[in-house]
Image (cartoon, rainbow over all chains, first blue to last red; front, side):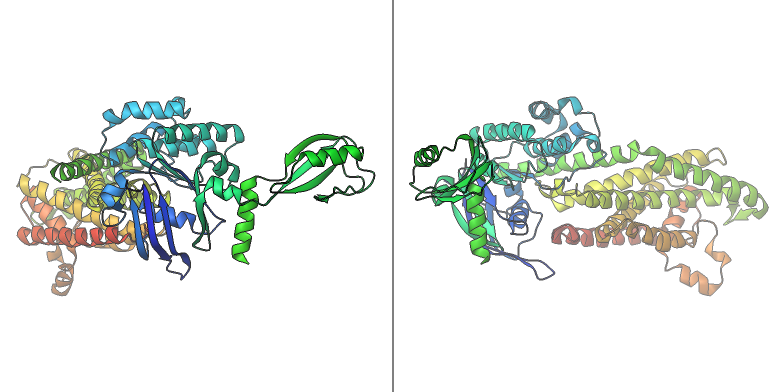
Length: 307
Length: 263
């Protein structure tokens, strides 16, 4: 089967001499929900820009569903929907007009696109705002408008460049559910995000890019399996009277603290922590992970790469 | 292959039509900024230059002064509005990055150029029509050659729409789209025989004037209405076609390269 996205030896040097991409390789299969992660300036948006025709590659190859993004730009773009990081619609146009105009650029008349526009705007809770100028929308609404616009021609591949940036948690979760239903319906999704929880929840495969190079490309499960230890924060019923120690575990605590941190390496049982604490007369009120699992891995990988 | 190429043409047709409608709706939506000012300015020209001063001047080029300046003022409105429409609209699309909506879609550069130029032409012609209707209050117009009138006004609007497009491609800030109209188009228009016949000038300045392309447009248009011209109409039309070919090729080359659009 043809890959949804194929990138080979992709290289980009900007006019100011900055090497944004240093020969990256990437394959995303059809139907995948793929995360492209990396710190700011790592090369994520440059990669997505080349795929969507907004950035000119220096060398290498990039294909969408087997069509070269430069030589077969017409076919490549026909199958692609793009939700960029920055708002890029006319602030004075009305919501419905923005979506219907975009349909026109894909060869769909206003009449033909109206039904799909209504469905999308309704699903994204924007139908009531259809006659409002886009500049009057809230940040979250503007993000959803860009999603509706990108989907109006029912693309097979959808690029989402930080689609939930600056969106509150409730809305973010409803957008996750929308993206998952799209993916279940067969749309290949390529996502960049700074919310690593988002990538972990949604994506099956992942690539991490840093300094213009792919430093990791694998499936999410394998990547998370690389996690050697996880840190838990235990909130205590009463403050500690003295520093706490548990045999075989790395514990961070101090006298007077009302919580302590325990690092658990792969294979170590968690039960032993509670048994030890119980024996010391320390009661635990609640327990949480110190940070998202993927976040820990991401930080380790990027830090290791930078070193 | 055949169905795919048919699909290409259909997409370009609908995309082009969408862009033209969007452009026309844009200038209609802000009519107080786009259609009203030229109507007021030209009415003042008719009153001050045509009526008050014109009555003291008498005849120019064999016709009364009001009749002489009307074609030039119509042409002046057409070219400044065609240019201004495309320059401001395309630059605004660049500035707000909404031009990316077209760039991520299967829209050919020629379709993008067509859409913006058509928008400029429609606004130029709309303003030209408004000014023509206003001029009827001050003088009576008889058309000497309708096809010359239509051809010259259309070709001129296309030339200046293309010019506005190129200006917007190179512009990096809003000031940049005002420089060419202020320092190039306005002086050339005033020196392009709108208010006088070049036969009033010395031989040297008549020769210099012949290097001003707007002189040809104004005179060819005046010929279409009044039947009088300082230049050969055939040359004017050929020159306009030449400009269109050159500017279209350059605009397409800029778009293909992504000048000012792609990094």
